[in-house]
Image (cartoon, rainbow, N blue to C red; front, side, top):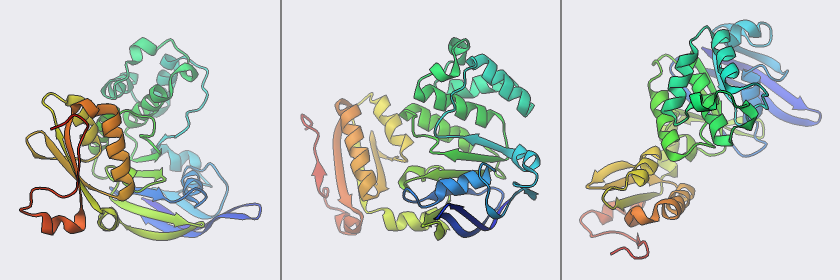
Length: 304
């Protein structure tokens, strides 16, 4: 459905994209990842026709540069930075629905699932909403459009745990033929959203591989968390980060070094009172840990 052929983009002497070529088939969920300056954002903008470039990008067979009104008709976009729209929320929703040929009540329903009551904010200016509310509204409008291609730039960056989980659920409900393309700094942050990762480095494709292959290299630790009874918020937090049940009120996930630090820090900071125990075991030691009480363990202060 999407083809990128020998795309090159330079900003003066700086080459942002250098001979980038790839294909994204119907049903694929792809992440562009890389460090700042790697070219991932420029590639995303090229897909959306927001920058001029050498080479060719097509969506559904239509050239993004030559016929953007046709190529981009099938694309919905969730930006990382919300535009400073002066119009009231109700008018923004109504105008978007009219342009997409959709019903505005579908956006209201999608927003409600993300934890945003649009009816209460209908008269507010879009630009006056909080960062999280803007992100939820932009996500709701994109999901409500039912476009065959969904392009996202850090789509869950401003979402709380419950909203992240609801976003993942709605993404999973999209047709199997739908395409998802997103941009992120870290592979760990997109593992629930994609099945393929394109890593950019110095404007070139450094790696293009299934997510499972990369995660096998990244997952260095098994983190297990035991929750106290009734710890629903902590459970939502863990499930939103792909922790799976592994016993009564216990959840576990294999994570990278960076993700281990991030998850454990946020868990103890935001849900410390709901945590009974946290254990961290190097994945390479799991085979030796079978039948052993536990590996290295981190105890919450005050926990037994």
